[in-house]
Image (cartoon, rainbow, N blue to C red):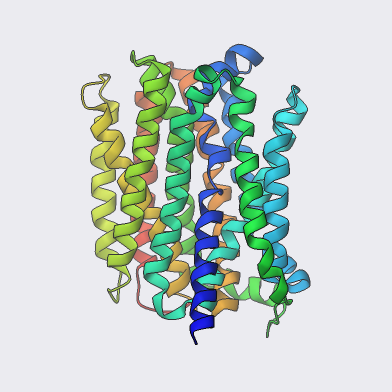
Length: 390
């Protein structure tokens, strides 16, 4: 019994390490947008693709993850995910446009696989503590994201690495996570499913609850990936220096860690999660309206508040996957479907936001776009918070 307990403790620590590595490759881009634009001459819309491409990869490859687990097991699929994540990050160091965008696509595939696998692993290995452990590991997404946002400019300018290596250093961190995960390969077994992959997708596609979870995942992610790309530029345009703007983004994501820890842990004790959804949405609307004000006076306050809301929303989205599925197999399938649809929705955010700024040359209209997205989030969250199984 003690050996099994120790095994699960070690497994969860490795899950925490993996979680820390599933966001830096994306969130390190935002603070470096100015440097990348000066060095490459890319437009705002094209730079937005550096965030959009991984999220598109999430959308396409998330739904295919169960196919891999059927062939090489959960452990083997996670090993593959961490390997290509590391490779994609390091490929972006190569000084060429094709390497920059190809590496971004490859790392996006790795993150997509990891995203889908973690809820199923929690459901299978820690079924009685799913709410608290989901909150813990999803909070590490925010912690890794915040760290990457905060140190990107210091690594590039202070340490003299330049923006390419400021992005590339995270490849070494993900290699450490890969090495830590490899002992799990000793128990690697292909997953056994009662239904075919096609039948599972067909069943989920006819379930309104599954679609509402997917939409909730999508719209909360759309706002998150849009802001991690463009919040530094908003602040810099209003007079903040790039280093401070990077640290404000890091603070936003640090507050997201707090939201991710608190909201799912509270929501998991409730039969329905509608009240947490409403509270999160109201606070998010307040913070977005605050960001519309063209002043830096309360910018840190609004950034921190929206970070808390987005972190809580992300934790809720993952919690919905765990609470609305009956077992680890269905959790993997629901995770794949909801993240595929959700991240496809989210991928449009950074590109549309950048395009709206290019078109109107102000931040008011793009932020108003995010307010509209929050209204959709309320509707989807109300449905996803119902006390029933998919």
